[in-house]
Each structure stands twice: as structure tokens, then as C-alpha cells.
Image (cartoon, rainbow, N blue to C red; front, side, top):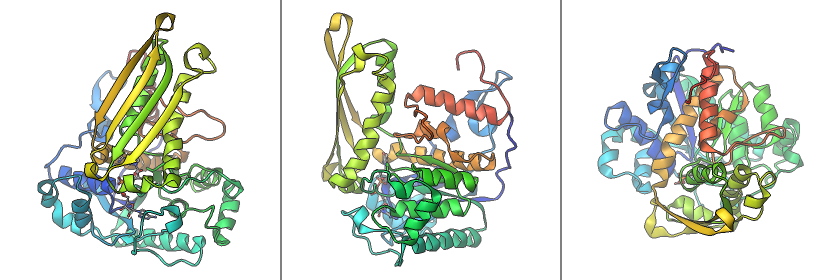
Length: 429
Ligand SMILES: NC(=O)c1ccc[n+]([C@@H]2O[C@H](COP(=O)([O-])OP(=O)(O)OC[C@H]3O[C@@H](n4cnc5c(N)ncnc54)[C@H](O)[C@@H]3O)[C@@H](O)[C@H]2O)c1
């Protein structure tokens, strides 16, 4: 059924948690450059992809649904380091100076607000630009105040909050996360073991009516307390963990094996990575969060319960090795042991020499623009149609997440069509 979608009028404030990071500064520099016609938003679905509508015409997605324009975005955010976005972009060394300098003035104007941070949740980080908060609840109050101030000072009509900050340590879901009431009680009791800083950002965003996106694998909004709160406040939430490189390949290759009924006995994935993200993930507690996210993918695609002869015994290992010389230019290797007719074994090797933040930046932008669209379309809670962008898609109430990239793409387009009151066409799309 066609949705009443409010127009994308006025400015859209995009508050990035970790605004001084590699992904954030790469995304912001790219958007500012695209605005000046200096770069193309390559990799961005919202800016480049086409879709057929019922009149059988192919149109850019941004002409089919009312997305906010790049010119309407105002960037801000928080970081544990005080450097402005220009200094941070230089530090990240993802982009060359010649590509950063044309938007130097705009980047210099983006200074991070002091972060809600707790060293115990990211032990490899030692930032000083942080809030003093007596309790987690106090942290939330300060973040809410930041959001309100930013919105007023910049004349924004709407805000989206995007987590592009470091991965926090792994924590399992517990009773503190079971309901909004129990989470609020834990925040007020300053239960720092169960309430992460990222949960404070998410709670603050939702309380202020701003969609929240989790770009890291943090538990954060993937708990009943947040699902309930997002529903109550009519706010969309999306996540988690940008699906940018190795997992993107996995969610394309695994469906191919399954479609051809080829068996898999092992999948070994390893990476070398030398940026700050790699350094944080070098701590076993933080790596565990990433590992869980990366491992979840293939089991769900292979359905070993249904195909025990093919997938009941897949040995799946994922490694990330911190290796400073490579900086943001991650290198990933996959060895996949498959088997075919009469059980004969074969191997596939994938060697992806990627650029982490170059792949993640357009995903971050698309998640922001589509979450803002969802808000204006009155959609709230977990946005499963945005699973397309996520390594570990959130799902609630016993639903299974969808990992297959092309199924995710279908779901995304179906949702956009539903928004404008169209059916999915019968033809191959
Ligand atoms: N680049 C990719 O391809 C990719 C893919 C999936 C997920 N991610 C995730 O995205 C996140 C960002 O990656 P990155 O390469 O930009 O890392 P980064 O280390 O360059 O940036 C993270 C930033 O977050 C800041 N930060 C940490 N804790 C904070 C807090 N509590 N509040 C405010 N700021 C805080 C850090 O100071 C840093 O500037 C990481 O969690 C990473 O795992 C990245």
C-alpha cells in the first residue's frame, strides 16, 4: 500500500559517532566533493542505482522516492579526539591530500563534540575529548542536549545519527537489555558492564526522534529494549556492521554454491589491516564482536538442516590481523574448499586487495539517506530492508535474517516500490 511520505524539506543533520574516523571522514569528503562536482558518488545505491517502475521505465532510485539531496546535508558528530574533520581526514590517510584540499574549509568547520566514551569498552583507545558523566543516564542526557543544540544551531529539519565509531567489546544479551524499562533502570543505576556507550548514543537518538544506524557489530540496538523503544518513539533503526569487503564477497559466493548444489567443507578467511580499526580489533574482546558478526553469514545461507549432505560440516574460520604498514588498504584472502559430483574436492582462492573506507563510505551514506526516508514514510523499528548494507542484519521476534546479497537487493527494491504503491513486476528485475 502506498505510503504517505513527507517531503525531504529542509536540512538533514547527519551526526556521526566517530566523526574523526576513516569511514566518517571518507564519506564526508566524498559527499562534499560530489556537491562541488569534483567526484562521483561511486558505490552509492541511493545516488547511482536505477530501478524499473510500473510504467516499464528505468529511473534512478533518487527520482522514484523522495530522498534528501546531498546539498541538504549538514555534518557533525562526536569523537574522542578533538581534531576537526580536515585534520582527521589527513590522519586517516585514506584519501590523498589533493582530493581533500578542495573541500578543506567545509571539513575544517566540522569539529567533533566531546564523546560519550568508556575505556573499558575499547581498551586500545586513549582519547581525551570525552564527556564527564556521573551515570550512563547522565551520558544520555548530555547526548540528547548535543542533538537538540546541533539541530537548532544548524536549522535542521531532521537528524540521523550514524555510528561509524570503533567496535566495542563483545557482550552477550542479558536481562538488562530485555525491555526499555530494564535498560533505563540499568542506565540510571550506572551499570557500566551492561550498558555500552553506543547504547547511550542510540537511546539519545531515538529519544530525540532521530533514526539510529549501527555501522559496527556492537550489540547496541540489537536488543529487545531498543526495538521496543524505537517502536514506541516511531523511529527507524538499522544495522549492524557495514557489509563492505570480505563478507560482501561471501554473500555472493555462498548463494552461488547453494544454487548449484555444490558442497562446502571449509571456508578460511583472513585479513591484514593497519588502520585504527585494525588496532582496536587487535584486542581479543573487541575482535570477538567482529568475529560473531562475520561468522553468522554462511550458516544462514547454506541451511545445513535442509542440505546436510552439502553443508553439515563446514569449517569456518575468520581472522583479522593488525598489520600497520597496510593502513586502510586491507588485504583479504579466502580459501574455500568445495566439493562436487561424487564428492570430488576443489578449491577457490579469493584475494581481495580492497580499500576499507572507500567501500564503506557509500554504504554509510545510503544507510543515512534511506533511514531518513523511512522516518518520513512512518516506518519504525528494525529496517530489515536495509540488510543489503549490513554484515549482520538485525531481525526480531524469531525472524531469520536474510544474508544473500541479491535477495537483499530484491527486498530493498520491493520496499521502495511498496512505498510508492507499486507491486513488484513479474519480469526478471
Ligand atoms: N571500513 C569498513 O570497511 C568497515 C566495515 C564494517 C564495519 N566497519 C566499522 O566501522 C567503524 C569505523 O571504522 P573506521 O575504519 O572508520 O575506524 P576508525 O578507527 O578510523 O574510526 C573510528 C572513530 O571512532 C572514534 N570513537 C571510538 N569510540 C568512540 C565513542 N565512544 N564516541 C565517539 N567516537 C568514538 C575513534 O576515535 C575514531 O576516530 C568500526 O567499528 C569498524 O569496525 C568498518
